[in-house]
Image (cartoon, rainbow, N blue to C red; front, side, top):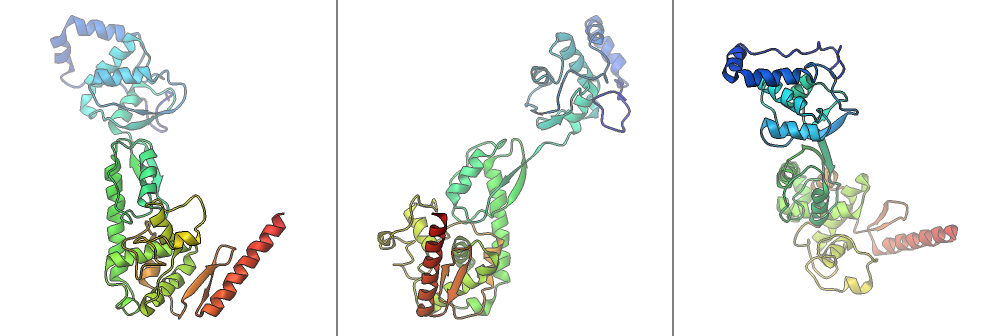
Length: 349
């Protein structure tokens, strides 16, 4: 078996199409001379010069441009004879298929025959990009801007329209097309959550898919514990029902950070008194829009809140939250939280 060939395959031979003789006659002596020179390069299935497997982007263009690119990158020998031989081989085997511009993987010592097989029928290299749950549109844009092998600029994203997901793509895909794919996912996921919602639990409180999306975004930013999310949803719904302000810090942070979703310093009392449409300490009801892209768990929690009369929750300091129905119990939970922080600080010192 010749090196550079896939396992289990017989070495390919340079077989001339039926009309090759006529083509040789047409081109005459010059083509015969070129073929003779190219014969010095080696056989069609002989191992090539590539020392290590590599990924290479095949450019758009004619065979001469592709040949030069392959030679420049060490997949083909850089000699004139090698380039000529490859172009002749590509011409005489053109019925096997077109050469495609793509990002392709070439094994070490790949032969001319195998190079042409890859160029015509190889599977493009797959890339992946992950959009984590709870990111703002600005942070999602930054991820897509840095993602390799994508092309083009990305217009501003509307907050909450991108579904958090790991998606695969190939070299040359546009950033806009990838964003469109994730946005279509969110449309589908949101519609399914809305259609399957607990109508009784949301009646008179959440009246549209967009409001469900806003609620889910608040839930997403309030807790990273999936099992807590239906309880957080219940707290917000109970407060909406009673006309209480939501008083959710992530919404305030979103407004203060101009949509970034994070601050370099902790929230202060003065921050909570800063007017703005996303300040849920001052504004009643839901904020005017989502504050991030929520994941499936938060969409489900918004559509199917837990039962209960909880109106408050506060962090435990160990990754979760304590929930309370009364302000007195909330005060106890807050004291417990600060006691935990104090004890932790002493242990560290």
